[in-house]
Length: 104
Image (cartoon, rainbow, N blue to C red; front, side, top):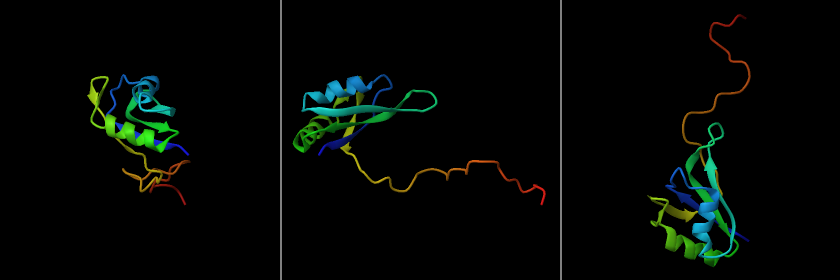
């Protein structure tokens, strides 16, 4: 079973490949991805790295939390699987909008 790490504080220039390379020195990286904005394609400043060995993930977390990557000090922690409550305003329902002045 793989162990997933959350990596925050990434530089806009950090790529998924760069993230993989930075963490690969600590063990076999199964997956590394920098999250991007759907509309602009720009980095959202965080990503995830998965290891096949929990001990390697812990070693990477200990070594990389607070380390510098591409000129930025990054934060590394175990990724949470729960989605939890959504932050921000509630999403508007899709479909035609209803206004208070609509005809009955």
